[in-house]
Image (cartoon, rainbow, N blue to C red; front, side, top):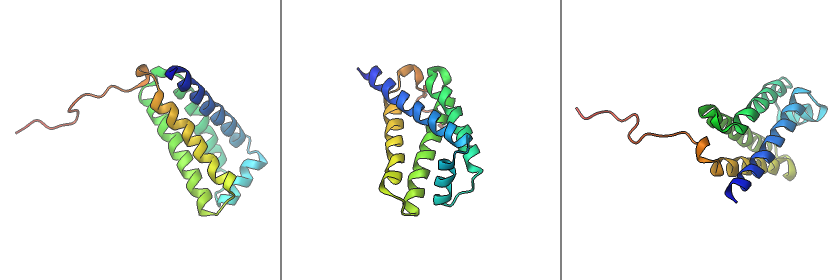
Length: 131
């Protein structure tokens, strides 16, 4: 069951990233309109589009290790930034809440990822030996 829920939310997240990244890279009029509403320059579409599409293979490949961790972090930064940007300009409820749904997909995917996709941590890593 856990594995199925993981894949459902991971695929929802990936579909959102592919759609959003493609939308951004195509510089669709809707993407440009959103950036204008938020006060960002249109060239940000290229940066966001590339980042979203690069996250997709990292999220789908459980052997990506740290790259997958960074992909999840990037997705979190994107979602948090989008949410706070919409709040800052007093955007509509739908536009403001959409990034929270995106973050929910990401959080569930991250929390339920299989053990093979987790980075091993060593106890005491980085601790200094007693002098």
